Length: 539
Image 1 (cartoon, rainbow, N blue to C red):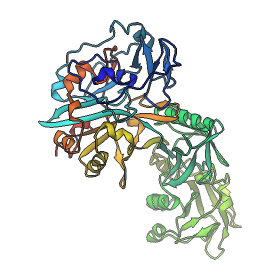
Image 2: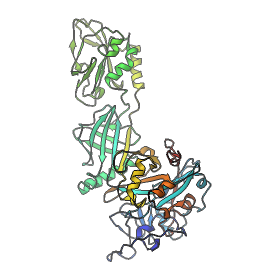
Image 3: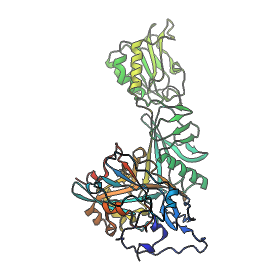
Image 4: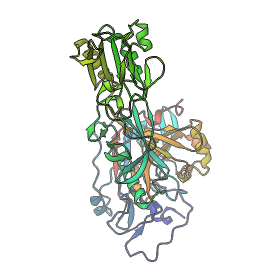
């Protein structure tokens, strides 16, 4: 049985057919007897939409173009360089109108880049392979530095996926394990804070298919927006309202954050101790986690500073380091205080002296105040000396800009592996042995250790609009596996479906029957290595 006899989904992709299409042994799905004339059934996901002519399915990714199921979005091709920018994309409505004419096809002849290895076929717009016993849409042979490579390209449908959000701010966003809500629905939780960053875990299988229908839908839409680098508004139970977007500063309770802390209070004391020496008699760096006190700190002792006699609230740790001086919040140093003197319990009259110069400062330098002790050892506000103001400014200078980082985490251990090899465990083992370079939209992925294929990628390094959804609900994202040709053969890959890059550029995916083409070209992101040149592929 040839490709023309397979299910409707095998007619997707919108790229003209190749004259040497491989054979697929599979049984066609019977058409629903209740389906109206002119409709076609899409099996790109388990929803099995019945699509009328000129309309898209529920996911907006597939459409009925004159009786042919076409992939709406263009396939994204990367080049090392692209002087003229991305090629224009024919709008979907126009593609439907021209479907029978093929008027929006690009020239089929491959260019010189196809020979030099300067083109990489990504999974963005490549189409899925559900049910995944079919070979991946693109299995592309290429060469790099004389080494024969193969890249298996597909879009995966992921229910087991989430986003880890790193928010660079001292502001307290909410208690650990607190629910995070989007449009009233729980879509994740606050997780362990890291150095200078608050962390959220969003999405995942317990919120996508595991919650109510509304929860799953809202979670899916939220995840698609974050993956596509759009802004999302969230509420944290018992905490803040935030707006987050990949590559942008977070907005906390309506205020855009500016700085990430230079370090904890103790670290800030250690870094700038010598610069404060001689201009301040005591420096207290207020911090939600570890508040630093200069004269008690080892840095102050090494400078032989005179003890100030200051007494700080909270739990004393090692000398000059205090925990829990205040509650978490959005005030000084991530605490809930607006008055820095509130953390001072008093002064040792045997050590303190009138005229003592005291600086209170936060870990970002955004808050600071200068005091001088009077005859009764009461701190009185005074004008900050220029020398001290310069050091406070330097604390701010050493703070990196506040940023939101969106990390996509997915488990590729499911059935999509059948589109790559008939023996999926061999793919898993090859990845663990570093024989396979895994990318998502051409962006490098971190492969987690342990069982399965769990990968993580910074969405900022992926092409724009890389993510889609299906209403099961699940996230759709690109994924590519590149390896040496010999290694692909050894792990039981679908060798009959391997096609040269030139042939792929000319004809597209193997499972199409003459639908119109749509391609999009982009240059490789400046932060990304070229996917075909990574060790151990060329090592």
